Length: 259
Image (cartoon, rainbow, N blue to C red; front, side, top):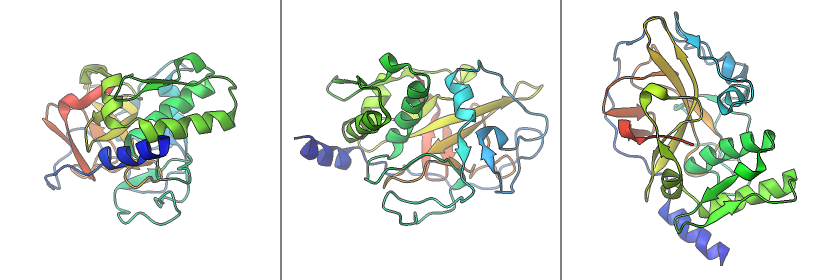
């Protein structure tokens, strides 16, 4: 039964791209210039900032602080779950050192859930580890709290939950209050979702942020370049524009959510 349900959901929740306007060369709205050298080795916190910006501080055990500690791979190639190369290798700035799995499950919303689940598991907040499907069913992580059972739990969640159910589970967030871990998500059939991985501010009060995604088919989770502002890339800036254009999808400003 679960196998049939999974096949149906793969057809429904695929992350097909929305139309995007391909405007290029927009001048930076923030002072300084982000690094264009795609040679970062370390973790999210090692991604260079534009001149004049500083990372915002968060509590040591927070989701935001945990995200910054995720290691980046030296190999910046995006691979699919079956080991093949993703056709588009121009969207990513860096690749996160996080497992893709060996099945076509960890796609867009699944990558969002993976990051949240890994954080809660690392913090031993097992009671908070739950996801909701479109029918309102709740999938909780229960004993034994082993890594093997955790991986099995996530495979089940990825096969049943998706962008539509995740968008319902999350709460609307205001751009003035964004934090790492917030998600820009369009729940639907199809839909898409990206995670805000880090934020920084300057003395003018301007806020910039990093985005990560997986996509369809399931693939390496990667930090996205900014296709609109190459001087600022891979950082994006908070502004009043109605749309947020990423390399492979265009979101609406009101699609920001929080856990």
